[in-house]
Amino acid sequence: MKITFMGAGSTVFAKNVLGDCLCSPALLECEIALYDIDAGRLRESSVVINALNNAKGNPARISTYLGVPNRKNALRGANFVVNAIQVGFYDPCTIIDFEVPKKFGLRQTIGDTLGIGGIFRGLRTIPVLEDFASDIEEVCPDAWFLNYTNPMAIVTGYMQRYTGVKTIGLCHSVQVCSEHLLKNLDMEDKLEGRRELIAGINHMAWLLDITDSYGNDLYPEIKLRAAQKNATKKHHDMVRFDYIEKFGYYCTESSEHNAEYNPYYIKNAYPELIERFNIPLDEYPRRCVEQIAGWERLREELTKHTSLEHTRSDEYASHIMEALVTGVPYQIGGNVLNRGGLISNLPEDACVEVPCLVNNYGIHPCYVGALPPQLAALNMTNINVQLLTIEAARTRKREHIYHAAMLDPHTASELPLDDIVSMCDALIDAHGSWLPKFV
Image (cartoon, rainbow, N blue to C red):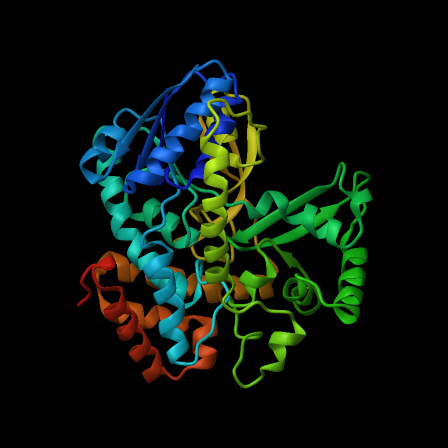
């Protein structure tokens, strides 16, 4: 069995996912191919993964592949391809995603999923994945493509609609959603044995039902405590708690993300909202700078060891591989096309996040039915942008970039149409060769 990790220079994430694989008896005697375009980061990741392997008695065979000329060999014969690339890096592209819109008066928090930042991240990522898909179809056509790269619904939706690659989109937010909520509301006693249903779209999937081990509905107490906490103290999750009050449900991804997925919280005309809801503007660039500095400190610690221990994490990747190999079923929250109306009041071309059962016959999305209408409506404001960004990337038509930005709820709430067009043109120019040519 062969596992290929694309974007292996993401050393800490590669360590977690591949370390998890080495904790599974069904996976540890595998071939691991590490691929990246950065020689230094690839070398560092190789040292770390070999140290993990050494701690297990070196059951896996590990090889490295640098740069596009070696990409097919990295993929050749793979059973699983884990994708964790970031096209354009923090510098220059994330900086461009934030600084150019600021000149037009548009402020963001994260910019990796929706908004103008998410649109342009998708536009520069999909062309790279077109090449990945071509290689996969040629040298490992039966491989599963496990995508962790954002913007999740845009990237995964493109792969599922326009390539022949078996693709599942994976995020960290589903498996920690209710745990974080209950801990934040001092309801830890309800964690064990709880049951839940989560469905919607990536980063805006909804905790539709949650009960304790006896089947009692936990939402009445959640709503009461969330409203009290928002009214009495500043905290990191005020936007999502406001969702509970205004729309009736909690969603999967953090408040700093969700602050920019709608027209309600980041508004130049109402600057007091930033303070009221504790919204961290420019949060993602700040995190990038901190993570780069943190990696400089962590590098020496990780790479100085010839043997590294690892405890299996809650990342889905190794559990999916294990279930596909052994047939022992495992449930995930996965990003899949809404074919057959898994969520009946969202379009079939949408990439939705729903419960999925994994076994040796594949990954099987579960039917959810209709979302509460207000939740489906909120999801649609994001789906519109996702589908138009995919269309822009697929057709290379500049007008569809404009359309995606014009329909983005945060962008449209702040800027007139002519400014949106001008901002898109400025972003295209600033990205230069990181984008293909749009006509």
